[in-house]
Length: 294
Ligand SMILES: N[C@@H](CCC(=O)N[C@@H](CS)C(=O)NCC(=O)O)C(=O)O
Image 1 (tube, rainbow, N blue to C red):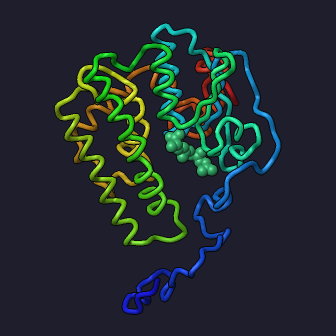
Image 2: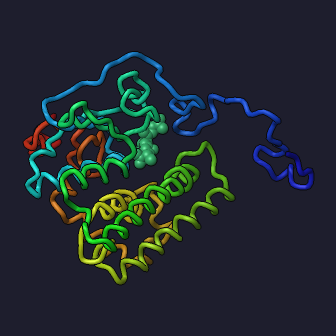
Image 3: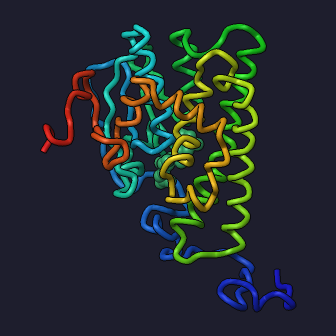
């Protein structure tokens, strides 16, 4: 599709999309080595399995942290059936394309999990689906009252639909793309600020996302939007996040929870947070510090 009046403004100048797209392997920015236009396994490898009912295969990105926060909250609330092994999936090395990982999640993205307490075992992928599954299974952090339950699912789905514009849109073009593109950065900065404002206005009148009740909606939203308020993409000044005072109040509330502080360490390979914990197989693993590991 060519509009010759503006072709010179395209990037690169004069670029016109060809009739049929073909894959330029080197054009994916920071993640060029793992991005592919096809699905499926690249290598044969089975997944490791530990002794707990839940086997989690993940990385401590915001999508991974949602699930480890909920697992830690469930354990803190006394649900010992939520014990889990958290195995590290290094997406930069392509672990998500192993035959074993794909047998759990054909979409090749962390987090993925298997519940071995059911017979046969239950495969789980998509962080929102995993939060809902765990909350329903343990009857926790998901209100049973009609309106509060509907509101929880509204905000859970809001998070799943909105965050890709922040990560895949704003984060990609602001931090990861091979060069800075004003049009893309402006478009996604605007959308990211709009989302932050949605949360800020909502939280001006709600202690947690669902009023007075802490739910899986908070656990889904915090890793993404808490990170945007703190360190993500080094974009806090650029996005003037200090404007979102009600959101900041809620971030402080969530980040002060011990289970959240544990959950965000799991499957992390780098700081923040302090003392990342690449794998978790026992509650005592949290006692390790960077010093005691080295
Ligand atoms: N909607 C999915 C998104 C998962 C996702 O995007 N995971 C990323 C890391 S945050 C990933 O595994 N990327 C590896 C890849 O794209 O190959 C969810 O919430 O579970």
